[in-house]
Length: 434
Image 1 (cartoon, helix red, strand yellow):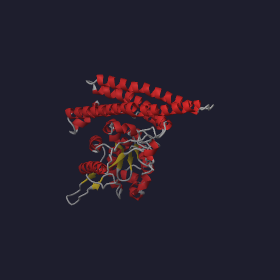
Image 2 (cartoon, rainbow, N blue to C red; image 1 turned 180 degrees about the horizontal axis):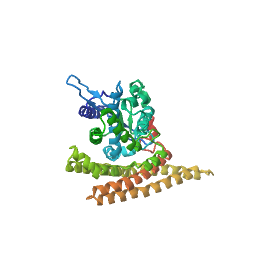
Image 3 (cartoon, rainbow, N blue to C red; image 1 turned 45 degrees about the horizontal axis):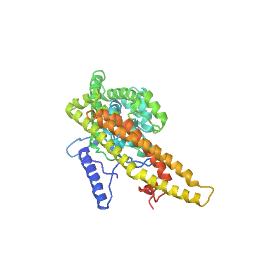
Image 4 (cartoon, one colour; image 1 turned 60 degrees about the vertical axis):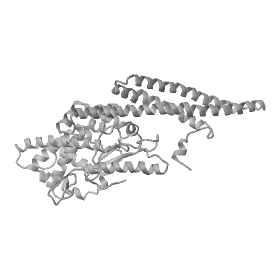
């Protein structure tokens, strides 16, 4: 779906209506619309690309306003474009942890960093042409005045650049895609309200800091454009670490991001903690977005939701193992034993059913051990009921890892047990129904 652009508050409402409609229509057909970010391992998950920009209303007749991230037709207009571009880079660079917290859910934890999804490392993709302009400005190349430098760098010609030239990197979590940014790391089941509110906050904070710096610079520089370009140059230099044009899925980027000092908040609980960091508290309360109590409340609600989601998954998986997977394996083992016994009675020398039965039996034994590990994790998590943060930490490590091991053995049994014994839809049947 690609909805029309509109003001954020309306977009949030319309997105909620779309999700509600999907669920209602699914029920009419005897289905459930899960909106889960990663329902199938190894298969593309589902997210939301929040196309985001800023505009200013010039006068009462101007309904849509002026897009501040749309390059203009003169060097002066493009200096305006560059300063707001700098504000976005500064905001995302400074508050990347807070932005990551805004997209932290149990479902999105499965998706972020997987084959097709943006990684848990927040970075910004600008495209080749804008990267060249940014780097040359940061390096201090060009003429003495802003107007001459804009012309020399070709920035006055930005509108002539084809939009698709800036939309080649689909691996970036936050990409400039022509007159707007795409915040691609938001999960499909989430409301866009909180992630976009945090993005607005981060950029508003950066605009405030840039404005103060610009006021100080104007005390020493007569030309506004020259002062703006000087401030922009410093921001571009300071935020170089957040810009990345390569493959965000690669292991090399993980290592490079660590060198650059960018946070890699892979698990949801560690991401959510960024909401209540000193820096996050400061910016959200300073700008009047949330009070200290409102922020604490939202943090605790999200941690509690994570704990409940994970416990439901643990309980459900254990029940499926007990009532579906292991009984199916026992049933198949019974068939193999009967066939082997009949073959032996008939005097058949080679009885392959014995080998298969031993393989399935070993898998069942392994599954039973992991099943006990599931129960152990559940018991220890519930014993920490007065410490939701501690519960979340245990669930995201031991709980998630144990479920992954159980899943691995169940997958192996699914490939070994005959179709007539297997009570669940097999993976291939769900993905490729006949």
